[in-house]
Image 1 (cartoon, rainbow, N blue to C red):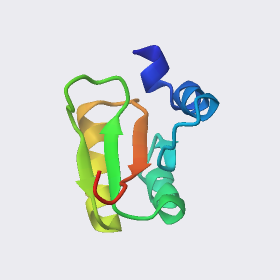
Image 2 (cartoon, one colour):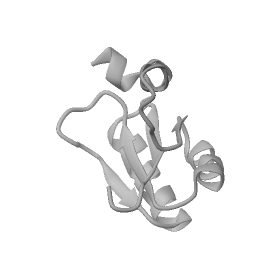
Image 3 (spheres, helix red, strand yellow):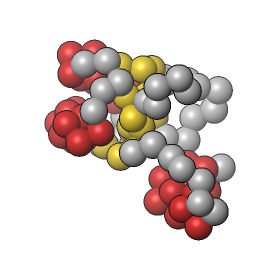
Image 4 (tube, rainbow, N blue to C red):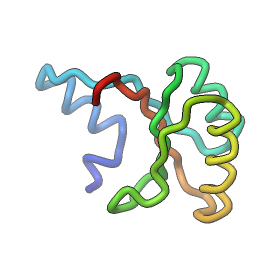
Length: 91
């Protein structure tokens, strides 16, 4: 679980094995998430770190949805890191 949830370790594993992966980032606040969105581009898959079964996972398509979802997640799961991945078309 640690390897899969630690984005740095996981991306190194993928890179070492020549496995392509979408751009991603980690945010701890709505402001950080909005900044990342500018780099990653929509649509984004947003989820809290270290959860099982997709709890709190959502695909967002604009800044309004992103901000609302991030605020909701941080209210429900305070002090968590949020993982943002660019959604790959057709994935």
